[in-house]
Each structure stands twice: as C-alpha cells, then as structure tokens.
Image (tube, rainbow, N blue to C red; front, side, top):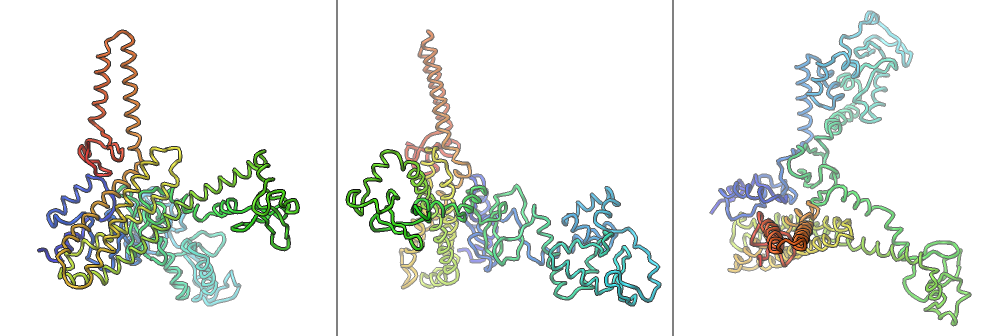
Length: 595
C-alpha cells in the first residue's frame, strides 16, 4: 500500500478540474499511471494545506500568483537591470520603467533608438544644471517668497531651488491626489524635469512615504494589465500573471477565488464573457423591475400611480390623496358600474370592449411583459439556487477536510490517504454546481427559434443535472451511515459507488461543457447530412428521369449515405451525432450502446 506522502507526490502536479479534450486526458492519465492507476484524473495538491480549495482543480501552468513581495522583487530586479545596462542612477531607472510600463525590453529599445527623445519625454536631464546660487548662503524661495538658508533649499536636476517646506507641501498634495505622483514634475510651471523617488521619500512624512510606495507597487500591475492583473476578490492582495494562448481563461488565486482572466468576473466556463456580462447587467438592471410593474400592476386612471391587485373584487380605491374609485378590469369610474355591469367580481363592459379590440394593445404589452418576466424568473431562480447549493457544498467540503475525514478514518479504520475518493467527490460537486449555474445563463440567451439546439441543450443539461444530484445525494446522505458506529463491510461497496458516480458525473459535465463551448455545433451535423442525402436522392431521380438506368443513381445515393455513416452515427436515445473517430460503439453523451 502506498504511503500518504507518496500519494501526495503522485497527485501534486496533476490537472484538477478543467474540462479538457480527450487527448489531454490521455496524456494526463499516462503521466499519473506510474504512481497510481486506480485514482481518477481529478487530483489535488496536498503540499500546502492552506491552499486547499476546489477552485485549485484548474490547471495552473498558464498563470503565476504574485504576492506583494514578489512584485517588489521584480521591480527591484528591473531597476537593477536598467541601472547596470544604461549606466544611470536607480532613481532615473525607476522614472524610465514607470514611463514604459515596467517593460525592460521597451526601455532598452526606445533608449538606444533615440536617447535624447526619451530623455525629453520622461524629463531626465543628461547633465545636472549648474547654478551660481550654490555659492550663496541664503536664498529666496520663489513659491513662498521667504528667505531661507541654502541648506534648507532643494532642487531636482533642473536647478530650480525651492524651500523644503514648499517642496514637502507640493509632493504631499500630489500623493493625496493619487497615483499621478509617480510621474511628478518640477514645481516650476515652465519646467518638465522629473522628480525621482529618492527626492520624494526624503521630503515627505512616513504616512506619505507609505502611500507613495503603495502606488509604486501597484503601478507594476495596473500599468501592465495585458499580462498582470489583481485578483478581484475583496481584500485580496495577490496579483496574477497570465500567459495567453495556454489553457482557458479560468484562473484560481491563492486566496481561493476562482475568476476569469478576460473579464475578471467569477469563473464562468463554458459561458463566454459577453453572455456573462449581459446576464449580470440584466440581474442588476431596473428593466426587470419595470417588467414586473407592467406585468403585475395597472396605473390609476386619475393619478397614474401603479397599483397591484393581489386579492378581492374588481372595485379598486386609489390611496390618498387621490382616492379615485375605478374598475380593475376596464379602468372605468366605479360610479358607472354596478349589478348591470356584472357586479363586484366581473365587468361586462370590459369583455365588450375587449371583443371590439379596445384593450388589445395594452393587454398584449402586459402579456408580453408577463411572459418575459416569467421566463427570466425561471432561469434566474435556478441560477441562484445552484449558486447557493455550491456555497453549501463548499462549506461541506471544508468541514469534510477539517473534521469529518479524520472521523471517518477512525470509524472505518482506513488511512486518510485511502479516503481521498470522498474529497474528490465533493470537489466534483462544487465544480459541477458552478458549471450548472452558468448553463442557465446560456439557456436564457439561446435563441427561441433554434428548437433543435434548445432540445439538445435541455437534454444534455438535464442528464448532467440528474447525474450531479445522484452524486450529491450519495456524498451527503449515504456517507452519514459510515461516520458513526463500527467499521462495516459495506464501506468498500460505498467506495465503489461514490467513485463511480464521480467519474460518470465528470463525463456528463465534460460533454456538456464541450458542447456549449462549441455552441452546440454538433446539432447541425445531422442537418447537413440530411441535406446532402436529399440532394443525392434528387440528383439520382433526375438522372433516372433523363433515361439513364435508375440502378446507377441508386448506387450513387447509396455510396453517399455509406460515406456519411462511416464518419457519423446518430444515437437513438439522445439523437447526438457521434463521430466514429471518437466512438463507434457507445454514445459519448448518454453512454448508450449503438443499436
């Protein structure tokens, strides 16, 4: 039996939860087979217990997490490189790097292409300005117009002397105004000489020094957003460096927050960023409030305030100061109503007017708003429910890792390393809840007129959700019977069942993610095949009518169909168009055997 450390080492470098293609799965399986052939490819790195989080199941080869210490070290290395390479002071090197967004290569290219132009643009003088004032014992500050000893006067390379008090106030105001203090220029309005970091830190207070250094640290990320971004989690101080073109945009920070590099929203694979932005905007927009008001209320005929009727008769009295009494159905004055118009619970005037088409437009608009609201509510409630289920599953996972796994180990006399299948199941549940949540946003924006795609989407989503519910129930309820009491022989059966459900659920969601990322393009394959077949038949029949033997046309059509069948076959259970290259026996969506 392998030790716990060996299993940890075997799983430390595996890919953990991103839905990848079959070739990538085969490669990862091949790498892991030397250490442990019985485990699934949903590994987890136990080398740092503080970093345990389901979102770490994403591949971490395409990004690097940077702490503030790492960023400061990179800044120091860049300054040192430019200082040594260009033979300039560290303060001047910092000015150049901030101007060129901390790109060492860009500084070198621009500097050697035209040094004079670069110096002029960033405010670096090649030689310090000489001044006869240095021989004076006293000088008049040109800002406060007070006389100060020369020792109390300061000037950058340009030679514009001002008193230390005025310089301190000038820099203090710039720091309080924001990150613009990093590109501070001389206090003389006619001068563009840069103020270096050394001069700033020597004049300001400790609080201002901390603010300035904070701006300087953050400039490395905020000036270089194409490669480095801050983690969007509240209170997180980590930055993420991303390598485009490798893997997906879904990243995970050390703080545990899983987010999309492209839009910096919560990780939302398989839904694209545009759909996510529209969905979030819709959830926050006032338009849904107006739709609800339009669908569930009517305006008072007198004061036009919206009124909701949730029970009672058709006699409505508006609130003070209006107090207008009217009929809810026809919106006419109640003084014109009574027994002759249908009493308190009906209105024949409304029915008559409706038959004449008087209320068609208003009713049509109200009905459209109601249908739109009901459709949005349908998807939003399921989106929100899966989010709350994911949060609950995440809490259960943390409880399992911190408390229950040890209890289960003692109860069933099993080492913790042999109970990893339980943690893997909870990791799968958390990840699948996130994916399932965003499929409802995808379904909301799926065009209504694409019936085939919608049917296929709803079927795939339903199968994946059903598999997830079975896994969740097994991990949540069936596990409780083994947490107390004595060791049972049925625990091995439970292990097999839970591991099997984890694997099946993973397959369902891999197929669902792959289909949605391809925009359900596989649904169009049977259509194209049907069109090709019908065109072949039409061509064959026209040749037959032209006097040629119909047998020849039949062979032509038959060869066309056999060619199609050799590359695709349609599952009778879910109608998915399987490729023979992927599977010629079992459907990759529902796992039903080919008939």
